[in-house]
Image 1 (tube, rainbow, N blue to C red):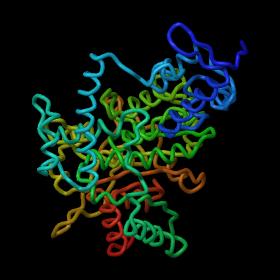
Image 2: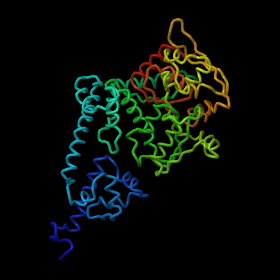
Image 3: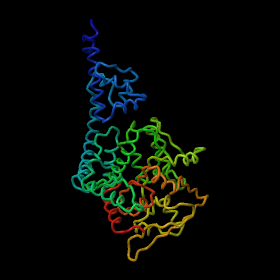
Amino acid sequence: MSASQPERGPSGVWKSEEQLKKEFSARLRRLREARSQTQSQVAKALGFLSESVYQLWEKENGNLPSAFNLQKLALHFKVSTDYLLGLQEEQQTAASVGEAQGESEEERHKLEVFRLGMQGKNWNAPEVDAHLRFLHRLRETPQERYDRVLTDVTYPPHNTHLPRLNDFYTPVATRKKEEIEALFRDRPADQARRVRMYVLDLGQVPSPRLQRIILGMQGAELIKGRHDHFTLAMSNGSMARDVILAPNLARGDIEDVKLIPLTLGRSQSDATAATTLIGNFVFNHGDYRVERVSLKDEKGPQRIAMLAGSINLAFMGIGSLESEDSMSLYARLLSEQGIDPAELRREGVIGNVLFHFIRETPGPSWEIYDPPGDPPKRIRVDISDREEEDILHTMSLHVLHELVEIQEAQIVVVVKDPSRARIVRAALEMHWANAVICSLAVAEKLSELLRTEPIK
């Protein structure tokens, strides 16, 4: 019998080799397209140096994978090998069907909460509460549950429910972006600045957590746009964290990257420390030639100093002063200097990033813009570097200034809170940064400052 003719086996009809290849390539292509992945991305995820092998599997009448590669494909796409070979349509036992139905019901509630959240419904809306009740956990407030569910929906791999960034580039956000860029660009030559604004209108997204995820996704798009070799620097802070952990930054989106810490405070291992963020990034992308440069390495400090001048892209969050029960490193340092962090928090003009950046040399005094109030009060902060405190600064403002002015690197501030607009302006005016990813509310406040408060 010809190899191309179907033959009846013990449990059904054997498919011809040509038919099997045709159906296999079609299933494989549908699985890849459903996850919005390229052939190159899948090939890299499977460990191939090029996409040529994978391309032949998707080609009609092309090659069939070996048993080992078939297993890798099944694990990557989270399907069975029988499904890939057309032996079943993902049929399950009665027990597993019941389990899957339970999972799908929970998923249905989660997706409905996400849909309502994207429509502007907050955690306390009656229609949202009806779904949150089904998803409750012990000792979890409805607001905490709401943020957890939104995070659960946005972070799974191969996510088809990610918010579309284009939806947040509303006409009003685009106008504000162009307005601020023009306010910097159209000044006299000695004051003109080239600033890139990425303004997202998050007014219809009530969840602060989801707002940060969306801003982080915009930062990830800047990373994904650089496939060639480049150096990426990161600061501490939750906003920088959301760029590194952005759900749209998939495996295979980047390669040949060196990561270095932009800032460090006292040695700490909390979830927002730059070293922790970088370690997590390397764990997720290290097989794509992503390299971490650490101060703990024998020649780490020298390598960081050498790479500082070649930074192509850097992210820093403005940060905030946490509440007393979870006081930040910066707040503790201020308290040691006899300065009340609560007072600075009320003024809304100071953030963790200032500890790292608003200083040129060890031990200076530095000033920030006058906070609002009548009469206005200028805040001066004196902090000296003491070796025993293990305060480390990987690079000075002078280096940032050169990166912005000479190297034309993108030094990006990621910010959601309008009260941080004064610090954003300071960073831009002093050439410590030249790009901003922010909410429309921040952009509106920044525009107001630029129009009403002249440069001193």
